[in-house]
Length: 176
Length: 328
Image (cartoon, rainbow over all chains, first blue to last red; front, side):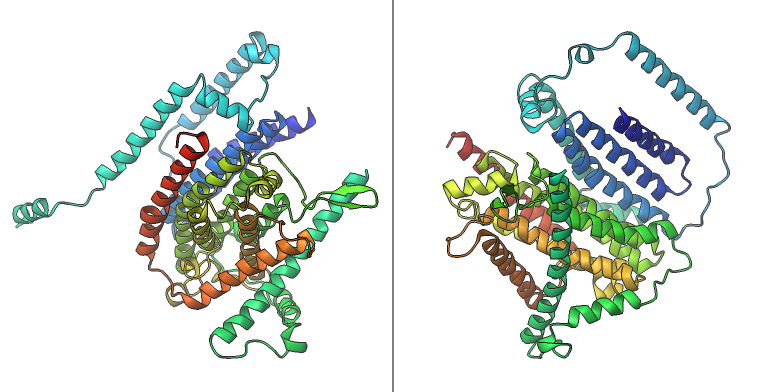
């Protein structure tokens, strides 16, 4: 129980830090802290593969891309944000998310899912178990996500394709 | 109780070995670079220059620790520590030799032997980017920033090809446990023979991941002064350098474990010596490449990673999958 409480507090500090921090880079780092504490929480459930995948994919790849963009955009900027223009929306969002969190917690306690009642399945979250799930019952979802990601990648390629020479010429003529 | 003591002793010994290894890898590199360039290299401190690392260490420790005025103090201080932490922690899962028997106890020559050791090594090494990117950003210097940004783009791109190149080994051994990968090679021969293409790709990407010549664009001195560590001095600069060299030892150790049979070898030498010899050969190749190749241009580096290394390792991965599953 103690490790869970410590990790949960760390994760919440990380999550709050993302919203509260003034510097975008600090926000990104708080998010990394949150991701890492979630990974250790997975380890507590002995879901070692989930934990490592969380670190490799989220902390090692996605957050580095975030940092890439954030460092590129905030370099040499003056500190401090422009004046608040959202007018109380932050408070509203905070209250609403707190309400949603409480509602979820109440639901989870009053109507626990079958997994919580019957305990974790065998091979939960380790390499073998994840493989069996992804290539067994959940194979269709895997293929769906793969197609979705492929579409996104192709979309980027299409949007960034180099201008064809003919188009470039006609464009120049129009400008002239 | 006794296992906890053993673990702490093992951790301390490993850190000691890595630090000494770093110091003398650096000396060997400087001497060899000297020979490659027809000069002597450092040979004045101690017999044959053997005490040079000690002198360098003292110099680094005694230098002033500077910080630029506009820097982000917290992140500026923590970035080199992150780099060093990531470099050291990867080594915890690498088995350095066959389990030995001492005082009636079986001692595994690694700190931890998790069932997914390979993935854990990759997870920790992927965290090493943060030290470089954050150090470059926190310095508030445009050269540092460019170095950090280059490092993040380069390491992300080459990590993909690196990950794909080791998947073949993972499938052939049928496990992600590094010790069992070595035992699988004992039964079926070193994986470098069926997996020669992934081995070459792994080695190229390993050079890129450790930011060494010809992939040292994050610290290209002709354009970026010294890249991400331009503003660093004293002990924090030393941390970056230590991390770079320990990373070099680590990726060589992983390559030996995955492709070159780990500690296996003819029995006239103890297993741990075979491991050290193989790592030393790979480290020498690192130095050799540094002395031979000029630096890449940035766009060539990116297109080489994405258009050459990634497709080849992916095709080889698919072929290995077809072969292992018995389709072919």
